Length: 445
Image 1: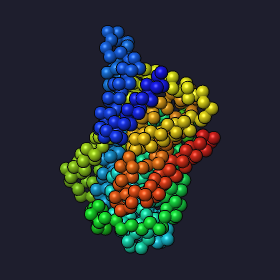
Image 2: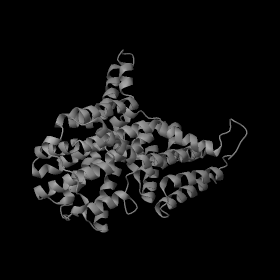
Image 3: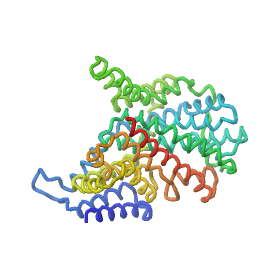
Image 4: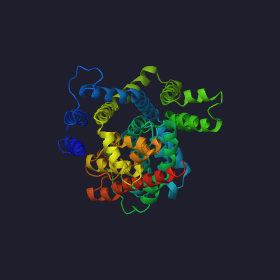
């Protein structure tokens, strides 16, 4: 009966988001309340040891956001500074000059990968699309052939890699190490980007639409306005350098080294993100002659842009806590554990199903957390690999209920049918490749 209640609850959540078009945060809270009552969590209790429904929701929201606010806030600020300073354009322009025309799609995919690590998907999309259109016009190459590789890189970094919202939240939910998850995620991300981007894109030269110019009239920086390529790449990748570098050095020197506490401090996600944004303020802001008040405007705007994302994550945290307090997540986990299927495949499959129904990769990843998390304890699955499998599943087959689908369709001026044959297939490729890569890593790590 518990399974039926949870399935009904998820169906209602999907219906509220996808069909009623109710705000996602409110949908999560309403479904959390309904599921809590249906699963027998007491609304009131005089016993202080008993967790009430409202307490579960508050604990879920607080426990989820407590770790994420600094990570996502600093990540958004860093991405905004990279965009507003011209560093993103500098990286793109430099790579495009290095690569000859027949390899220009590799330059674009590398640009998307570098910029996509610190920058949220929608921001990276809007920032880099004008460059894609310019490159396609200058090289006279088909637009989709040039643009899809960049979007594959942005999509994969959004789904797999911290500090993006869903993978960062899953790291906390699954008890994974963020630095290790980032290192393994980079290993899985590269083949997914190559197959979904340049390899698949090379089959799409017949698609050469004319984009709507009104949709990509963004600022183009002059050479004098942009920072140098070295400082641009260093600042954009600083979180990766700190988190990945600290994790790698810890493995090399061992836990008994006097340097281990220093590396633990530098590799702490919160410390790494705070250091990254402070250095970015110097290298891309005041160090380039900007006033601190001007830099602060960018930082405030960045936080405003992620406010709704934080609320969605909070709502997903409430739902996860309701499933935990009701112990239905343990029950579901025990049932799934009885299946002779890898927990990585189960995590990917559950996230894929929710992604197909809801559309949002972030919602799919976070909604899966409460169902998938018990598998880690019961099966001994690697938490970092579970993050990657869930993240890969959250990218599966974007279609008409996904805002990314419509962004691609409208910016590239394609029909719905052609968008399904290009964008949607690319998302399937990066999702399946991510699962296969994660399964392969499970035999090594």
